[in-house]
Image (tube, rainbow, N blue to C red; front, side, top):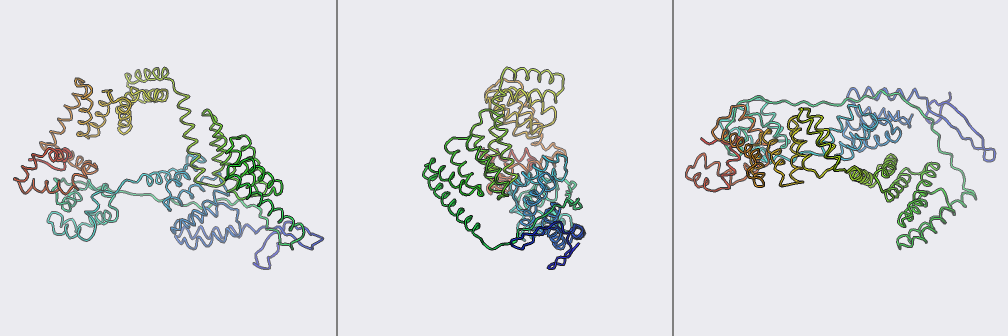
Length: 601
């Protein structure tokens, strides 16, 4: 063991060689791994204590000692993320994946950094890639769920404006019905949360104090019942940083030497090759492909250490429709690029171009398998948005061709009959399986969607049942079963007004359908029950909460005209009588009555 004269850092001398003609020594060495381990341990301790800035410093020291250790970059990425330095966290996460592309945690770090930067699509991609490597990883599953929710975040609540500014507190203090609530800490916390994040209003609508406050702020009187509040909790991920260190040898750059005749000749060849490339580019822009190929080929002969000459020639072959030649050039560029350790972006470009050529040659679904594989390899080299887009298009094309190749109406009818038999035996999961196969065999058959909607309804999977029923109606608007299925799902979801409209729409096509007529009757009974005020406190509470989340109800209550109408119904009977003569206003009032927001006595 010797000591570096500059850094005083111990290193192990592995080998040396002497260049006799230049009297130059080339030393190959590596740092003692125990020092990197010590710095890593300090970083872990600082991270655990919440001192993330010190953790970054210690992990940086460890990386300087062991620059090929993927765990160190992963840990520093987590520390940067804890400091909300997501750009730096993303850089370290990318380096982690580059050093260890088959390590699932690296993609967890990558997804977390993208999520912190609000790159929701990239975060979903990163977590999905990690789950391909480790499907049971709970941290990746949780991250994917968070990213998916963020990507599909709900629109802001239209009632949010009512809670803005100090005027809210003044109104609540002035009204006797809400003044007492302000002495309750949990209520004040809820109001503050709604002010910060208006979209969170839906989470608190079942709390009758919030409903009462909303009525005061909107100048609308709600009939409320006392209820319990719901509490939420969230979990935090815990970083695990103690990973085994895999140390690799690192060779230093050779020492600079005086320029000699050989180097001068190399520069001249390089300049000459670049001129050929420029002439090839100019010919390519003019669509003079043969001339472009000639110049690129000359550049390759002059200087074979720049793979851009090869990828450019591949691009010309691609434009000319010579896909086999394009693929050969791309393979050559990738092979030569790895030998020269060229920029990974250039290798990725060659792989992307090869994937494009393979895609042009694809005729059946199986032909897209090498296309997808090539794009995926390109993305491991460099995550380029264009390559990702091409990958998605190839996967979509493969799926469409698979559906076309799988299409067989006769087998679809057989599978539907099998599903019918299982439905009669009340074996609904088995019936769903056969109906699904029938849909794959014949996606245009509305009967398979209708039958599967009935199964989903029996299984309590209402959203899936509603989706199938709507697809059934889309395929055949005159098929009465589609309307009865959709109406039944809406009825079970207690959307009685929507169910009534669905049944009535179906009766336009089949006026004597008994199933549709019975559906209308059941809806009328439920709506009249609300009109008479016969709902129990729990039923009223549930209807009000559900109604306040209905966009149509929200639009009615935020409409200035309707707010005046509701005020007249309470305070000005003469004006109320005039409003009652307006069919549009009566229809909106009926919506409010059905949802439990308004009651007529």
